[in-house]
Image (tube, rainbow, N blue to C red; front, side, top):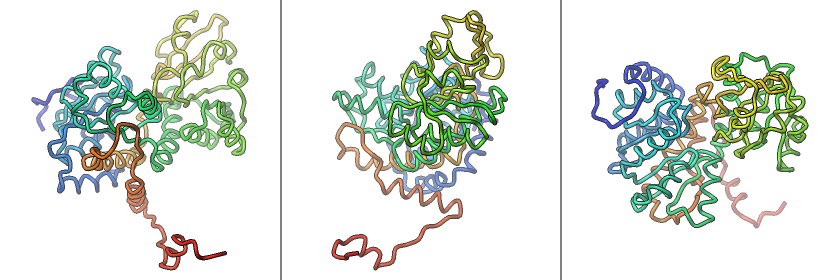
Length: 425
């Protein structure tokens, strides 16, 4: 496709389109399940006449999801869900190689971020894809005139599901949203394996730091925290977990991790990684007792887990961009703290996010759920809903087959046994 286009967009550099296309095609090689779905959508056109606005990380993996939806007949507008996650070459390729509207620039400021969300909403969507609930929040606050058009949508993150659940609890959510984040395949592949690998990848790219023999403090032991802790231990780190949930804390201890409050862990940690979804997990009381050279990274969705504002206001000196996405803060006590990716989502701010093979499952869940919404949204009440189990199982089956695996099939006698109560022990 030509680098001149009438497609509405706001991107950084159209000249990057050819390079972006190469990277999108590279990611496609590791997304076999999504490729099978695109092949079917090209024939069935489930989204003919459907407009979809998506607020997601503008990466090569997301680009392949957009290609699937377009193949299915959708009219699309994509904006970024995080200012640092946009890959400018990917954005350029989506517009100039694939004819998809994109409103995203890397490192855009807050005003530009919301201007892009509103530009995506200007297509008056029927469905929405969100990654953190900012697009849905905008719809319910400043773009309420569009709400009657919306039949439903999908949410990709834990943080977004938390916000949507609260909206539903307060009676504010006006249409059904499917929690794609909560599928078994998403928890396993994306949150655990994807976050574990990509977060540490970002730490390495930003610092070239050796984890073996060092103390890594992981704040939060949900699916993401488990993945980070497991991968750090596998690289030879001494891992400490901090938690507010005693059950999760017990799980961490039973897996061999040390468990303690952050006030204690802050004194001995070398690397701190937050994955909680809450704010101020690392704050003044922790900064003041940290070792010289402590490394801080956030792998939660929003940039509120580390109190960056305090660091900005209470340091003796800031050495910006000491390395790739690494800012050094020299505290008044002389100790240096290294903050990665400005406290934003580190695996996308300082690296490339999850591997394509991971996002193959999450985005396949999302594509099939969008198809489900076209048919069933009218039968769903406003609120947060789970992805139908059959969709998640089908995605897992296809992924397993693509990796050369297969499962057993129950015999008729086994089926009968599992579905009856008459048989005793």
